[in-house]
Every structure is written in structure tokens, then in C-alpha cells.
Image (tube, rainbow, N blue to C red; front, side, top):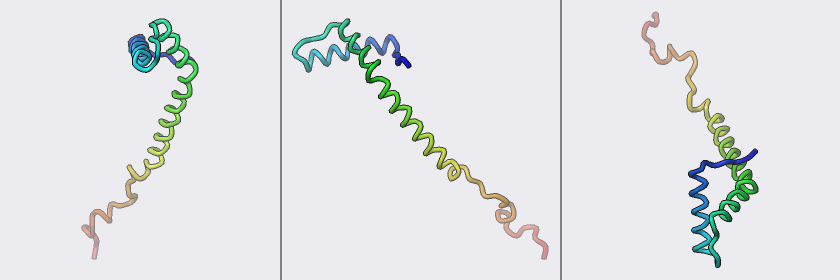
Length: 90
């Protein structure tokens, strides 16, 4: 599965990579090189990050489903207990 990001996200990521290199590395990086580095990370590291996000979402959903019975539980056959003794024959 290929992980793709929008054109705007790609431009922002390339600019961020260029800024990172400018502020933290000995040599700046050009736009073409930054784009290639971004492409490499999306192909090489992206799936691991994506899979982690899917696993986290799945765990959260399973936890939510596990608590569903507590969240929406309704007492069965409770009409007479909520009505008190009204209408009871002596």
C-alpha cells in the first residue's frame, strides 16, 4: 500500500525538511533533495507509522466496545420497581 499525502502537505513537509537541514545540519538541502527524502520516508517509515495508528485506533475501539454494555445498559423488567406499589391490589 502506498501512503500518499496531499500536495499542500507535501509542500509543507518539504519546507519543514529544508528548514530542519538549514538549522541542524552542516549543509542546506534543496527542494528536489528534500522531496526525494520525503518520498523515501513515506515509503520506508510511513507504513510503520500508519500501522501503529491503525493498531491504536483498533485498540481504542475495542476498549470502547468492551465498555458498551456498561454505557448503555438498561435494567430489564423494571416497570414495577419504578412504579412503586401503585396499582397493587391489597
